[in-house]
Length: 188
Length: 188
DNA sequence: CGTCTATTTGAATGTACTCAAAAGCGGTGG
DNA sequence: CCACCGCTTTTGAGTACATTCAAATAGACG
Image 1 (cartoon, rainbow over the protein chains, first blue to last red):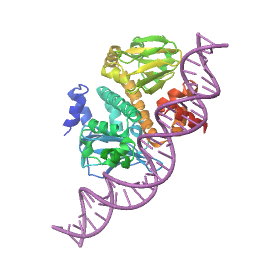
Image 2 (cartoon, rainbow over the protein chains, first blue to last red):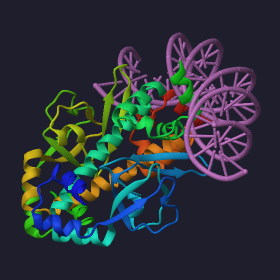
Image 3 (cartoon, rainbow over the protein chains, first blue to last red):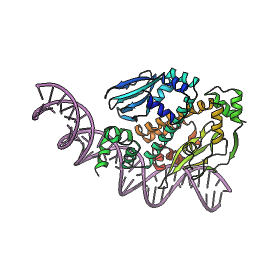
Image 4 (tube, rainbow over the protein chains, first blue to last red):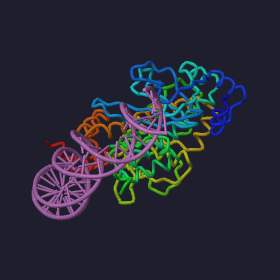
């Protein structure tokens, strides 16, 4: 039942069976239906989540009521409010299931314990975070350098098939444009 | 001579003297004058750099010849082409000294050796990268949510005093606006 | 002092935005 | 099975903000 996360881990590092046992014994399985919130603003964030099935979105609602999609997560992605989780603050994000989904959750204190006992996971998350940081840097560059159409096409190729799982409304908010504008560029 | 990086490390983790000795023995001191390039595109990236004195910028030149500032680095910041460094690719960035600067460099192979011998540095860089990732996420949100003036003021407060060390031209490129536009918002 | 670069100002253009409304689509219940 | 409801997508018109191109001014550095 933890096979997908084990496979993911082994893509990056080579843990011993004991390391893996330590890690997976702290995971909990969660099932959420489409439309259900895993997290809402103001919550004390105790967990991060690995998606084994389904699709979710994390978004921020600004002071004008505008929604900004921080990330989508499909199978084999981690999702959470990383700022709140790591800095022990209350959440500023909504995390909502876009499809019926299955997740594995890891608790903050458990993760600290894992880091202490099995530093290989320090390495695993260092590598994941480095990759995420690099990808996010490219997202900034892309927003500065490219127009809406180019960014939309880039988005579709970097999250394959996601345009069929997610509304244009959400994609527009991810790209930082209005749904009207995204619609227009798709037509012409 | 490595005191500033040691102090920085101790802000995040608690290495043993042996760990520190291992780390600092692999550092090399570098002095660069204003205007000198530490890195140019197409170079095989072997090092990342810790700034002990001075100020540098990392930027990308796109296919239209436009410059995009990826990051500035002042005292106690790490700078480098993280994508190229971590993925063993050739550089896509320019890194240039804005002031006469002093740096400590760490070699890729040395760093892998350090990770193996002293996993505490795996932790150090995991924490730094996590913080950088979170800060960068805020930069994306800020660009979507705020206008140029608000972003400029935010920039000045998050990099204190940097507006006196860096040209408006560079700040505009960092913010993803034209120098003309930045000039206008500062007047009115 | 002269040159080179950075900054400011001006005018015209363009892209994306807002507000508004219509059309399309999917799901639910009668 | 169809009618209705809510949400998403599309279309339209007017507006705002940043851009481009051009030129003048100011500042830094040798």
